[in-house]
Image (tube, rainbow, N blue to C red):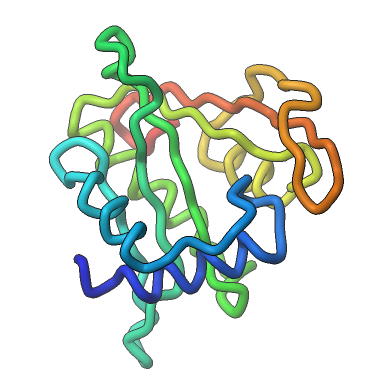
Length: 164
């Protein structure tokens, strides 16, 4: 829902400023994020949120994005997953990615791709846990915080049951 955007943006922008979970280097302004959210129609590239029930706050979110505008790649999407720092280590990332796998499968997506900066071991473990496998590494393709970084490519071929 559009009303979720401010909380999603707060989680995301923290990662922009403090980590290599995203290769954005400047915080995203709310108006750009609304445009981004509206470009993720639930009918093709969904965004899902996890709400912490006792407080009603967004604990994390995930989405699928277009991998390529070329028509031959319509069966493939790229995943993103972000969990608020106070909810990490509780299995929420697994729940979010599993839900994304099933939702995208139901929408005709058959392969999910993830780009994970090589030092992000927790993200690598999370993706491996839900069936992603390393497909390769792109060497020295990114730069953030004054460091040149390698980015791993991960893939998950969906079977409709649990994504993996």
